[in-house]
Length: 172
Image (cartoon, rainbow, N blue to C red):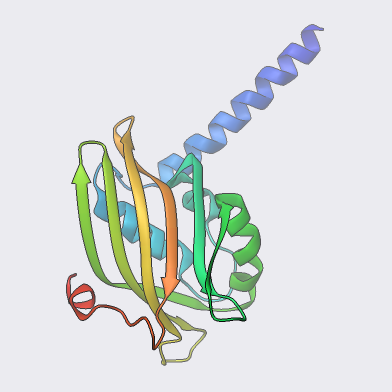
């Protein structure tokens, strides 16, 4: 029985150490700007693995993510997942493809310990200089334990019927 307790304690210690290592990689997330900048940086880069521990450290443990997309009949539909679901959905793509997403505008609203960030983006694929898509990430954050955490991200890509507001693109 003592051996099982010792192994359990060691397992918990390893988990906490791994989480602390992820936190050590972070910049100071007591401000929103470094958090949003890290979000873009961690998913962008040449084909290959991403720093998923750093990515996860940006989010509250109960965070959700999702996207609005057009169904085959042209109607908007919402698809959602948790952070691990995003990693599962996108990890293989990033491993095989360069993906370079950058922010092109931002609006931030803060009330106490909650914040809403609309951040316009564009991304390019591999070495193609052409912008593959633009859109808006709608990010909700909470301030807890001395730092900001993402609790939710929903995004929608730009389309002819739904262009990015010009004021949003210029507001960075």
